[in-house]
Structure formats: structure tokens, C-alpha cells
Image (cartoon, rainbow, N blue to C red; front, side, top):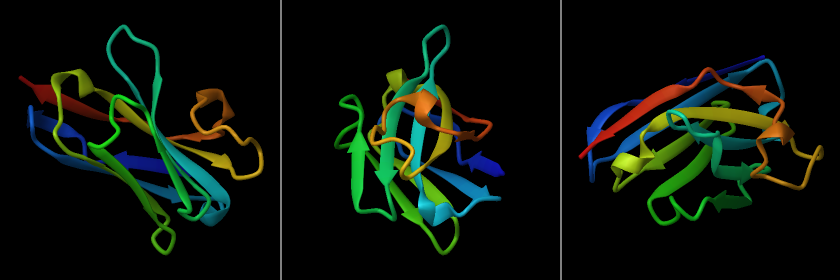
Length: 125
């Protein structure tokens, strides 16, 4: 099983980035996908989740209206489009996967089974 996150980088406040997470080794369409982030000296926090094959999406309040999660089941890839970035969005971003029927929750990191290695997003002011 592998989750390979990419797309991070350095961007000015107000800018945009698109993160990608390519999955392999499991039946992608049977898994809910999530993005979490961890800033220096802070706990990992939920960012967004996409449930099933894309029927529902959920967002943290701090990113709602700015970030969009999507998935391409044909490419086994989940995306996070991040617009209007703020310095407080600076963090290591992780993608994660949980079997669809393992839990009805979507924002709890411990419910997720597989994790990517993280991609760093730095937003300068």
C-alpha cells in the first residue's frame, strides 16, 4: 500500500496550490480519503474528506470556501485544491485512506488506516 503526496511548495499569501495523492495497493474506490495537516509544534488536524466515490465532502471550518477536495477513481488519485492561502495554512499536509465501512466518522485521524508521507506547504506573508 502506498499513498504518494505531492504538490506542496512555497507560495505567497493569497496564492493557490493543488496537492495530489496517488494511491496504490488497495481498492481505491472502496476507501474514503482525507487530508490532514500538521503545523510545527501543533497537533495534526483534519482538513477535508471525500466520502465514497465522491458523494459527499467535508471541510474544516478554517478552510471551508477556500479548499476543495476531489478524487479521480480512474487514476486512483485524490486532490486538494487550495485557494486564497494564508500564512496559517503553513503545514505538512498528509493524505490518508480509511475503508468506507470501517467508521462513519471522517475527521478523526485514528480512523484512517493508510497514510502518505506528507508534502510541505509554506505560505509567506
